[in-house]
Image 1 (tube, one colour):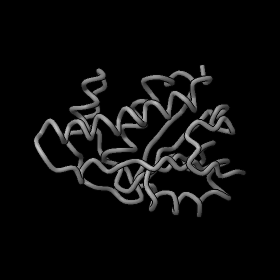
Image 2 (image 1 turned 180 degrees about the horizontal axis):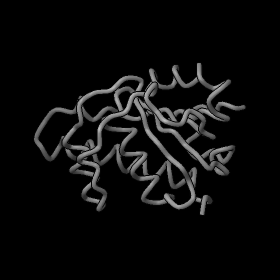
Image 3 (image 1 turned 180 degrees about the vertical axis):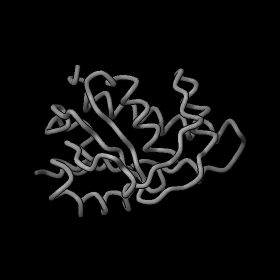
Length: 155
């Protein structure tokens, strides 16, 4: 069991994983994006889920920027970690410091590996609608890049 820190492209267990959990604070922005992007690119080869340490209310900007890629997650409801149907994952990828701390506590019984991908919180961006959407797109695109680097050989 290894923690790969913030090495998004590490090919440890991640490169050979068959299941992954994306974990963030509220399961409304980063982790649902990551789950949807993984399903889009590796859905036939990799079981994936997402959850939050706790849940929040859906964010409409997430649906908008994901729809730009042809992925509809507008009706998706946030899921709390404690409400997941499955509790074992080859890899848990955390997207916030709080989620990372929780995942490290789970490591010995719930996963082979925990990776930390620090991800910006686009809700803190202020400005025009276009500036806010650009912040969400940036998070989406960085997640996609990390996913492709880590699981690119999953096919």
